[in-house]
Length: 444
Figure 1 (cartoon, helix red, strand yellow):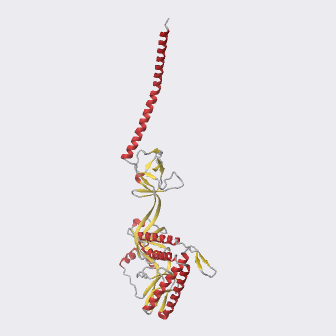
Figure 2 (tube, one colour; figure 1 turned 180 degrees about the vertical axis):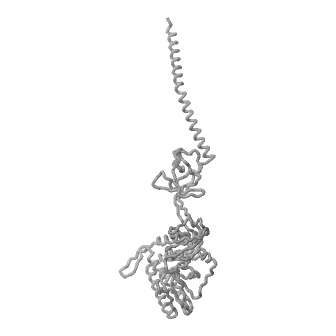
Figure 3 (tube, helix red, strand yellow; figure 1 turned 135 degrees about the vertical axis):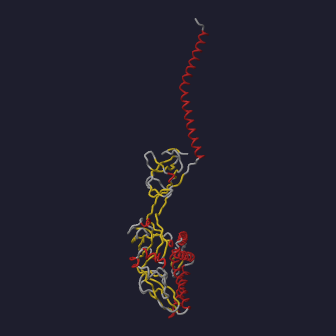
């Protein structure tokens, strides 16, 4: 019979063996889990390592989707044809025009004055300057936002004054003049400059009291009346023979380029215009354009002419008028074999802006495409063979299908629908050089 000490030793041995067995079983269960976690940790480390490496060695390049407008256009040089009547007038003295360039006038309306001596002409210039000054002051009162109260004694007191409206108008005019200058539309600049000067003067007078401005206007009108009376019979008026748009610019083409000439014009007669030497008679002092309709005749090569059809609506943009786009219709296309075609455009728009033009370079805008600009290098095809691009959405690459509406050598113009987030939208960051891109894939 074993002693109590041996029994105790055996119990310790069994307990030790039980602990060892439990440790073995635990190690058997935990080791695969540890290996799995190690593999996952290694995979995650490798993934982010690759992402960091790619970000450093080959950074992700993107381009912003911006709204773009592309004009499909044809360049041409041609002649304007209008219904023009020259004004021939014999006179003795100094001629001074009253009607402005491009002004619409009625029949027998005053368009110029003839003065028998230089002093009368000088007085008229002074009268015109006074009239401009009076109009400026009267406009200054209208522009000013002064709140004027009338006292019991009939006097006027100013409660408040502001030049904010005039300052805004001045800024707007300066921007318009800068835009016209950039586009070289110098024919439209004179009016804008006059308006700018007018607004600056008005703003200066906005700080003057109501009574002072009114007193100045009264004095100027009195002086003008006195000068008008002093001219007397030394001034003779000249009046328009017909109603229409008045112009002082005579180029000698008026008798040659008429509506009847356009109807019978051929390619040969058009080319003869290059050798025509216009003659301006000495007694011709102006002209009247008597019809709103005008024509622009030019020649185009067969390929460009084939892009047009009779009665097609296009837009003409002339060098002298900057960004002004004039809506026109293709009046006729006259071909002679495989040579250039004579193309005639007609319109009744913006006659006053084009009145001084004869031979002019033009851009024929056949069509206009609007959308978002997408580089061709950014195009991808998904598993369903849809054409699109990947954009950055948060930390993910998102595939968006696109529909091209116009193609150039380097990029597409694609349509956009702002009401749908699935559509390519303006300011989306388009991925250009990404590799192994997938929809909803996390990107570095």
